[in-house]
Image (tube, rainbow, N blue to C red):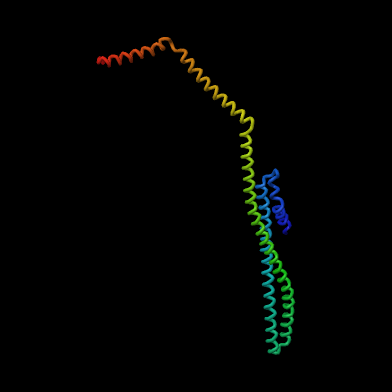
Length: 221
């Protein structure tokens, strides 16, 4: 009955850590192992319930047989007091039969009681192991997720420092420098395209300023 559970327990104790290095998804495998362990526990629970029921039936039959032994003993005594020897004999015969039944039932009941205790002890052990494995599963899940995250980060950092990334950065830097050079060139061309009249306007504005200052000095504003 406990063969499958023992196999599952061995796997959990011995192989779960190794699974993290294999191709299969360790989280899914952990869940699968625990599901199988849970199903095994349910089967044992059903067996324990059946065994306890059998124990109770044997106990009730034993108590009934013992009660009949006492009853027939009292009846035999009453028959003797009433000088009913045949009736007393019949009562004693049935008493002996019930005593035999009680002896057999006592052995069966004690065996059933012992089996129930063993099964209940095994069930408690299985449940304890299951809880421990469940806690270990949570820990291994966290480790698996952490390992995946670290791997992802390392790959990202590796790609950032790769030659391809560096060359791409340099291309973008070169493009920016080209844009700046084009802007400076367009400004130079704009200056060169100014007309001669535009150049003389600078002088005209100076003469106007000088005339305004002269008027101000002469009070002719």
